[in-house]
Image (tube, rainbow, N blue to C red; front, side, top):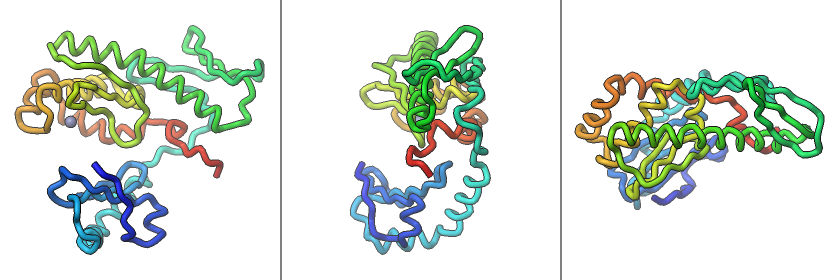
Length: 249
Ligand SMILES: [Zn+2]
């Protein structure tokens, strides 16, 4: 896949995060609006700029409507540092307690679902990093073994698991058998997390979304349609600090 920025739209569009991506695999033009309002147009390689422009013009009303919806659904701004963190996936509710004590900025988990934030918290960016690191670690500890257990129970085979913070996808499975999971799954309900894992594990047998693929998914997760829809909307459950921009406003 190649990512390119074609000079197609006004500066205003570019500033709002419009991206054109050329794909060798794409057979036709598609457009996607992410929960953040980012617009991505995927085009087959060597599509002319004029063709792309016409395509976008034809779909502009739809795109704008989707962006409006994304804005309306945006997570309300919560205080930062957060007062609590609800990791629904593993049923943990962490309260955050701030102490000015200690030189080094760090987040220390204590028993009883208590997270202690120590040190100088004046640098919001640094504090966010600390929370993000904690989230990724907690997600790795929980999601990794959960995936392994599911694979064992249902006889799936994969090479390794990576847990990452990603803006646009919940999981993926490579041809080499690497399954990537988004740490934001930690904010989703357990059945949704289980569905996503079954979905990615099923890709180890079918690297596509064919009928056979969905049959495999359905065998282990009959309710997959509803859970897939819930996951699509799962970005709403992700606290704003997970993706907030690091540049001070
Ligand atoms: Zn898939």
